[in-house]
Image (cartoon, rainbow, N blue to C red):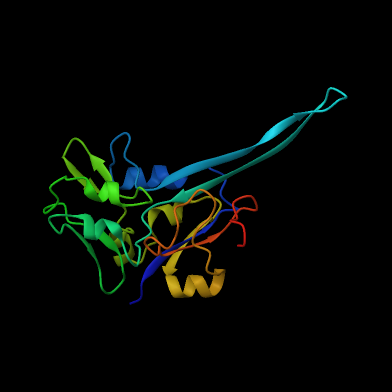
Length: 195
């Protein structure tokens, strides 16, 4: 088995948050805890014309993100009790709830905000790539519920071969920090200069 990753076609995402809600429901997450999040990025200005009209130069797009099951995850090395591990076969990063002591260092270490702290149980948890569903031949819930089919998953090498190597867009941390296993087709306004 190969390293798994996500593909996000940002130009298709409409910001409906079906992925967030379905993930939240599947994992029975409390208010304020979201393993998959959808961010809105807005930029631009309005310009008053001499004629009195207003011309806008606005840019807006959405971005769905969860744990990127990074090649060099910062969460694993930050955990003082070794509760976080990266599976050698599929590259999925998980938090062992029996071992987690709730130090929250993983929450602080992850540049993508993947680990989420649950104040009710005093432990951190995160996206586990719906390994339980995959074992039954099903897709991760975020993939299967996206009405626009903007999220795909699979071996990251195959996704990169099919969609390219973009793994960082405007507003994201540098991909050199953790080498995330994500491929993005950026929205026209989300491209970094040079990409």
